Amino acid sequence: MHIITSRAELAQLVTQWHKENERIGVVPTMGALHNGHLTLVNALDGKVSRRIVTIFVNPIQFNNAEDFRLYPRGVDKDAALLADTGKVDVLYAPNENEMYPQGFSTRVLVSGLDGMLCGGDRPGHFDGVATIVTKLLLQTGADVAAFGEKDYQQLCIIRRLAADLNLPVEILPVPTVREADGLALSSRNRRLTTEQRTQAATLPAALTACLGALRAHQPAPPALAQCRATLEQAGFTVHYLELRAESDLHLTQAATPGTRLFVAASLGDIRLIDNMPV
Ligand code: PAF
Image (cartoon, rainbow, N blue to C red):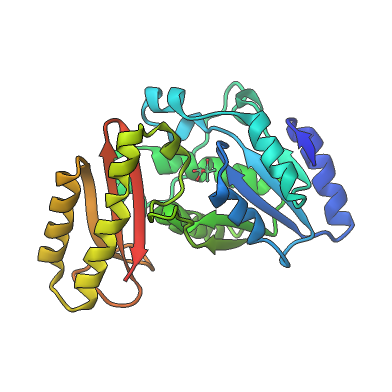
């Protein structure tokens, strides 16, 4: 596995690969890699002939300086993990100046999908995500890009921007990977204390119970209220708990196939998100 930090070097390699008719897959990440990321790498099996994983902790998608500062980092360990897969050709880990040189002033804004859920209380977050993902898709010349369904709103926004900007890339959604107790894998889980890690298991359990009630035709408002109460009793601050359509994320009370339960809830200052299909 080759580690590249320079955009010019990456461009040279991508041009060569395109000449050789290689099909390029990319997995954009912010590092602190876990099994969920490796599942994204594996999801490209049979779809591409070259794989690039990117690591860049993108400052413009953090609306909280402390969250950016505390975001787990460790490129050496990440590089070893990726090399061990034997599947990754390039780890692209540019620095901030490479991605946002002096004078950088463009933002990609996907309107409509960015004002709800995590967009509601993280203003500017999705503009930051859309901007960096557009840059990474262009820089890597990817034919396929894999994104986890855990960040479902992010996935919808990236699909939209790729379609709207006519980017010649397939956006590949990959189901959420979970711990044995159901907690969705996330780099942020590393920051949970032992006690918080135990509490965190309530999140998937409460969502699963809520889905059970919805599937048994209990009306959505009481089922959601019960789920919220369970989470609050377990020590969570609930930011949102909503049933929305997968297609365009509109709010609904009808728990039908094609809808999903979305949650964001914090333990202390650690914000966890999750979603599950009805
Ligand atoms: O999901 C993430 O890790 C990030 O939001 C992404 C897509 C790599 C953009 O920085």
